[in-house]
Amino acid sequence: VLAWVLASVFAPVVAPYGPLQQDVKNRLQPPSAEHWMGTDQLGRDIFSRVIYGGRISLPVGFLVVSLSMVIGTVLGSVAGFVGGATDTALMRITDMVMGFPAIILAMAIAAALGSGLEKSTLAIVIVWWPSYARLVRSLVLSVRENEYVAAARAIGCRESRILGRTVLPNCIAPAIVLGTMDVGNAILTFSGLSFLGLGAVPPTPEWGSMVASGILVFDQWWVAGFPGLAIVTVVMGFNFLGDGLRDVLDPRLRRSL
Picture: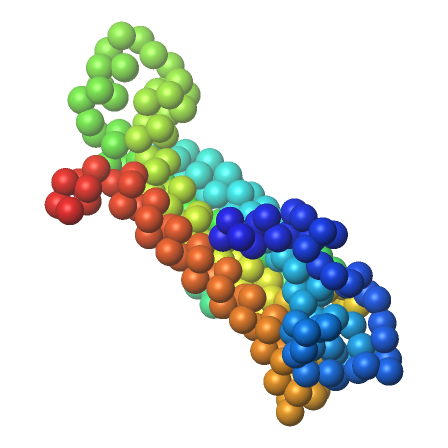
């Protein structure tokens, strides 16, 4: 994960060519010393485009998870802490969104909004927040019954202060772990939308759209293979990172180890 972040930040230094630089005479060249990952249909250097693609996919993944976590945490904490009709109404909305497969609903929303980075990002956020709302609600329901919450009420703390300063800090660690794992999944979903033409618009160097263009020249495996490998390594990296954070943030798991 750190290697991808650094490569994306310093893409102008790492990439030997511009992501849009064409050399039609050397189109569809296999990997070589001059072009480490070969070239595509327009002679563009695939290694450079993969590196620059990280500048799109990684920020989208972080943005989707950040917005979804904020929305889900707010709605889930309010539902779990207030309860009653508020809890019922918010959870029915959550259930309604979760009732659709995430990728299918994201495709439908992206198709309605139109292609583009901002619109596809918004489509993913709309279908991504319910998992955080469900998780935080379940944690709040458990934490609000603890004695230190009753003690805060006994000394006259406002309900909003109890929720923000006493309950939420004891619920946020699992949400952070889920968010870390979800960055990779968000990148994968965004790449899927781009693969279908609903995400980044060509010639933007984005991994999903690069894989889609490689399908047209399937016998030149490197055109789709290396962008696909980038997606695989990023998703696996964030999954491993999430597992590590879970081990660090869960004291009961640390004691069992």
